[in-house]
Image (cartoon, rainbow, N blue to C red; front, side, top):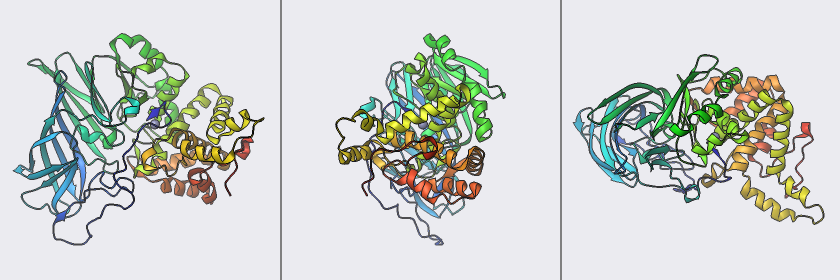
Length: 502
Ligand SMILES: [Zn+2]
């Protein structure tokens, strides 16, 4: 995600601390799967006891009535002997559930949907759950951005952006990045509207006044990256210089300007391939909805932008590169826990600076790093206030709030702009200067290759960096990822003027 706000999402702490209780391994007696997957920050997110392989979602969308009706087929494998298991579904009503063709009992409290099959499911067994559901998606999320996470009916269509936990507003889901799966979307809309989803468009059939769009995502996808956008779009089909197909969906009135604003995307794609490895998915492209969103989101293989991107300029170019880079860092390599969000946002932020370095020269990168360091270190305030010494204690306290250490952002501030994004990007530049260019890019490639199409923790990146460099980087990462105040970058003569409390 890219944001033009420092703090975007206000996330309710569902509870503090302890991981969800796990069933003891090695027992054969069927038991209920855990109500949470074990995320240390959000103990009810995701669920235990099974691993989803594939979601097939049939969605009937009534834009006028603002209603959604769905049949979700969830193909999963039991990782324990299951007497019952949970899915997340928020604000919609479940009408019927069956498992492998047999009706199953269910109860629904808050967003926890508990399903009890007629017979227990054996450990290792694969099963198919069918869930019929529908209603009016509930509006949740932050009033600050005027936009709710998950499924939003907008004038003339639908806008979906689910990071971090909005997927359950539109389908029953094991809603945690740790359980990635492939997807089929069958979206049925009134004829004349278009439905654009994450994946490859397989089929379009119009009959009886309705059109069904079938989209497939064949690579594993985290639930927050699944999306459907509905409206009227003009389609540009092109290819990147390496042949990767690119499909861009623009608002009809912005078709020409949209093509101009996104014209470097193919060059960015091959540049990132040269640094990180092959582009992970079958296709790429963007959908620009006819709404000003105030953010963009790297929905898998089909990034989402609001109409303000059409204005172009350097900010637009940075965000376009940022969402594309997420296809490697975030979408292919996905955080194992939400606290690992630096692996998404620090990397996508730095990748966009690398694009500017590649395209405009090393002095442009140098300027970005100096400006951003000045900003997140608090130096700008110290420098501006020479005649009247700034109260260091007050400044330090403010910096802790505005710029969190990127390695472990607080649960309520995961998308902290100054900390996770900017200081997170500076962390990678400081690492590059510390180990040298060759080693740094070898680290990125080794880390990416090791965790592609899977999940990683911050500790996994640190381990890869130490392995590839042959260096002990404990102090380096302690300073950059976890210490409250940002370290110096001695190679550039950058020093933090705010003093440590110690
Ligand atoms: Zn991002």
